[in-house]
Image 1 (cartoon, rainbow, N blue to C red):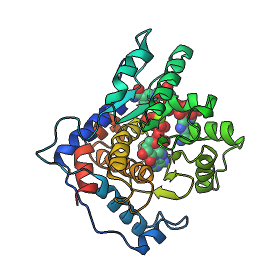
Image 2 (spheres, rainbow, N blue to C red):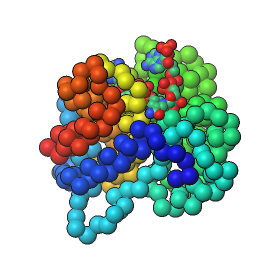
Image 3 (cartoon, protein in one colour):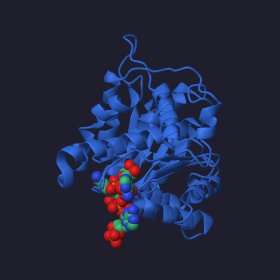
Image 4 (cartoon, protein in one colour):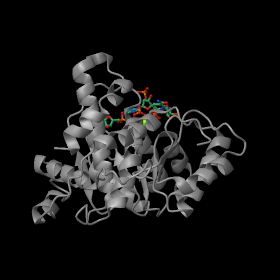
Length: 302
Ligand SMILES: NC(=O)C1=CN([C@@H]2O[C@H](COP(=O)(O)OP(=O)(O)OC[C@H]3O[C@@H](n4cnc5c(N)ncnc54)[C@H](OP(=O)(O)O)[C@@H]3O)[C@@H](O)[C@H]2O)[C@@H](O)CC1
Ligand SMILES: Nc1ncnc2c1ncn2[C@@H]1O[C@H](COP(=O)(O)OP(=O)(O)OP(=O)(O)O)[C@@H](O)[C@H]1O
Ligand SMILES: [Mg+2]
């Protein structure tokens, strides 16, 4: 991309694509009505719900075959890093867009006005092409200023942390965050944005497409080092493409983006868990990236 892609998201996306080399497809039989109940608003976070949701993620992992060539299972662009270098950034990025399967916008981007104006144009060009977009960090800052940019674009996923969610909620709903009802708050924000998928990160990750709510409570760690969210948005870029490519029959009728988001949350938290077991309080996001392969195998190749 014409942007600097030094953020963790780029590394994470690359790491997950690299994991493809070890990925197996586990196209299971259709899931039964129990699964539908497990996804209900009240018990999606139960152990049974978590296991059922994991199975759906396994269903979207594309098979490795000798017939595929480089890039076929996903080319993911990251508009991140620290600044856009070129005065013709939008034009330069535009040349890449036709080749991309998904775009991750925001980690480490900064909030410079000119830069965000370029990002706005890149978002418009991506939407016009129907490219799935994951928006995080400073990309969310832009959306909070101009929610119309993403309104009704159902191939978008927003991944706010606590502060970013409050900012969005205030901008879109005019509501201060209701800390007591996180599930309702995420559902309402998604609905108000026209069913854009929202992933609110936290002690549990709460995910909604405005119709259903999923919770991810995979064991992570107590370590809160910077960059974990970038790993989540980067890996989500890959999973969003896989989920859309797999289609709703692989996700048993559930929104592919909901399943992709659940997968990225689970993977990030498992990486955190494994890295913390080895490095304890000195764990950094780099240590987590080293766990992407083993965590992926453990979660999605069983
Ligand atoms: N590798 C890179 O290049 C990375 C780059 N990044 C880039 O860094 C920039 C800043 O991003 P960010 O995420 O640190 O700022 P943001 O979320 O606005 O928080 C600001 C303040 O809000 C608070 N706060 C935060 N979380 C909270 C919580 N759960 N619960 C309660 N409070 C919470 C907390 O306030 P404090 O506690 O310090 O008073 C915090 O200091 C941004 O440009 C991003 O792109 C990052 O993506 C990291 C990896
Ligand atoms: N209190 C918590 N307990 C356990 N896991 C958490 C907690 N808060 C966040 N996480 C996990 O950490 C990951 C990153 O979430 P976080 O809220 O730190 O994002 P962020 O602030 O955007 O991170 P970044 O520093 O990359 O910008 C997510 O996978 C989330 O599930
Ligand atoms: Mg972040």
